Image (tube, rainbow, N blue to C red; front, side, top):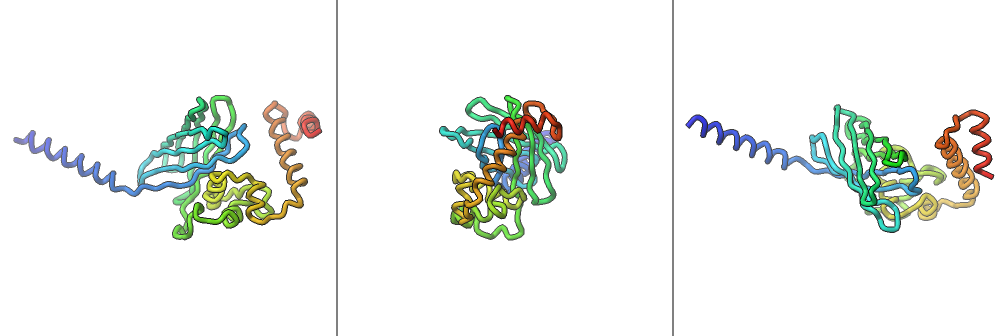
Length: 225
């Protein structure tokens, strides 16, 4: 009798714990990911339950076939953890992440199976979450919130990542978003030159040249010629 009572109590306790876990609120947040070798920003969604230490995320690569990628993350401490992602084209990556305070989002870094760097940011919760979601905004409103002043780059602040992610989901490049936001492209040549310089510096770093050295400078000049 004692065994039966104990067994019944154990089952009831497990059922209660399961029901309690299932009643936890489900959340989703935008994730914006930059994958070295892929020109455009990659947008996706990260899913998690209230109080859980792990979750999933998914995104589509901005290629012609819209390759699907699925990932998971798990907290190792209260503010840090690890993540991994695998795409249908046999490309995969993993790394670490850190949160930036309660409801303040997170950022992560890592590398893929080809040694290419992967970085991402997850948008945090805002005090005015009742405002219109990015998906409901017009192209002009969305891009005005996603671009830095002058329209040369995406905003990097965590609170802006939801707009950046939605812009990427709609297939907007920085140039296209400038047009949608009504930012004049009269300085587009200057912007292109600065972007080319940045790309040249990154290439020279990948080759192995150290910054602020004569060889690094020569490398950059040769790539810009």
